[in-house]
Image 1 (cartoon, rainbow, N blue to C red):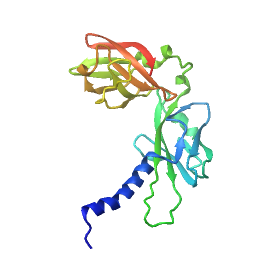
Image 2 (cartoon, rainbow, N blue to C red):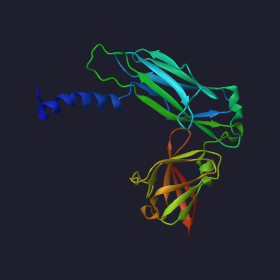
Image 3 (tube, one colour):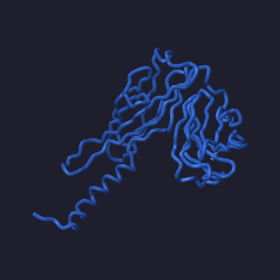
Image 4 (cartoon, rainbow, N blue to C red):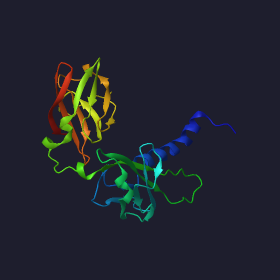
Amino acid sequence: MRLSVKKISMLAFPLFSLFFIETVNAAVSLDRTRIILNEGKGSVSLNITNNSPDQPYLAQAWIEDLTGKKIEEPILALPPIQRLEKNEQSQIKVQPLDVVTSLPQDRESVFYFNLREIPPRSDSDNVLQIALQTRVKIFYRPASLILASDKLELAPQNKLTLEKQGNNYVMNNPTPYNITFVSAKKDFSDNTIEAFKSFMIEPNGKEKINIGVNQFNKKPILTYINDYGAQIDIEFDCKSTQCTVSKLNQS
């Protein structure tokens, strides 16, 4: 039996629509975009919600290291799997184990928390089901690095510097903290530089910014994510090839 292109398109459209709708509407949601785990403060409780108005979901949780390998120490996610009824809320604990003290004490360590939603089995054989997954970073912070204040003027990001090397800036992070940058701007407006690629710079690390110096104005502005998931703009003041932080501003 032969099908015309028009008929094939009409048959394929409902399948594509289902895939698109499921992709942008995760049923099980997490209450944050990052997790800060402070030494000596015990576990962190995460709130999860089944937003489906008509069916239950399973919620599966686990921890990975930076390479994407699933681990069971020094941090655990408990419970590893649970059932959420429609519109139900629940919690998952990110629990440090005793061996967490073996992690470096002079800098943050980074892990990934994963949350996968598993839908109930469909009664129809012609339904495409997708298990969507949320992945956020866990920052384990030794006691000596726990921040005593959330004031911008005291933020460790004030110590960042930029160095002009050829047609690019190279960021230097002299702090013991991992810092994630998500956008670049010409000024403090909401207009971002589209070609910019987000990155995380490690403690005492250097990172070459992918866009050229000429894409910025005289004072480069880069946006990072703070402990609460808020976006903070950093403005740099440049003299010759060296740039230091001149201003921090919440977006």
